[in-house]
Image (tube, rainbow, N blue to C red; front, top):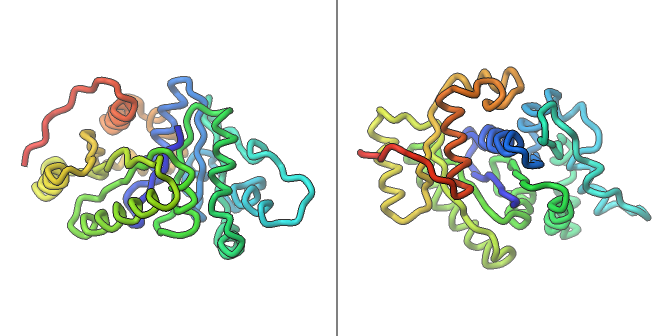
Length: 265
């Protein structure tokens, strides 16, 4: 399964959600790949412990060969890096993505990522794609390449308005480029259960018929500590409440039974 984590808004936890769901997948014995399409390279640094700028054989190198005049292109799996965690791999980002974007767009290479990830699907049980906070060539490529889309949601009114725009953009892309793409769910992230506004917003979105997932991810300093230590929560703090929320989210996405407290306003 190829999942993309997407939101045009920054600071909503895309990289954290991508890497922690992928880490749980890998910890369950599934060969799991994280594709980092954000030039900032947060997922790359989080899982490999090195900035993207220091790495060779990146997603930029893989995509650049599609516009270069070469006799033989390297296979997508030659750009995959192993992480320190069993079964977890990264196709790392690069700052070069910013410079490469115009060239790829001019050459109409919007489907090349999908071609590469379909080949990699033969070697991996799960693929998670992290995206930049923008609707650009790369995020469109990711939405075309994916089968499922997860949308992190920061519980405020500005994010709500942006969410409607995002769903409209995805709907248009589904119609024109990827009819198999499914919005798997909206994830309420950095949720404050004692505050009335987040509870009310989540309830209203659910009542509107939007696919709000029943697991809400709390705000916790433990996530920042996880970033600093370069260890996903399942490895750094397996018994922490936020880790358990991520595990519940993973179970929900895979159709497993989860006991959840009902949300009331």
